Image (cartoon, rainbow, N blue to C red):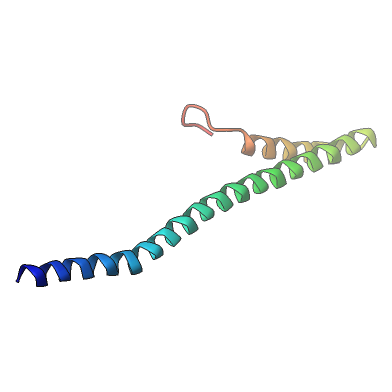
Length: 94
């Protein structure tokens, strides 16, 4: 009886090691890769947003140099709205 119980325990441990553990390890690796890719995506999106703000800044500069005050006023409002949107939250306020 003890021998049969021992064989069952060994069989269950072998099945765990042979089946569950490799899949669990692959899942952990995939989740780590997902976190890494999500971090890279967030950084790329931040670069795109900052590039858009730079583009707005250059358009404001061109409008001021033109001198096209009405367009510069509208463009500068959009520029500062974009800058305000990128500013990190402080004290729970945005």
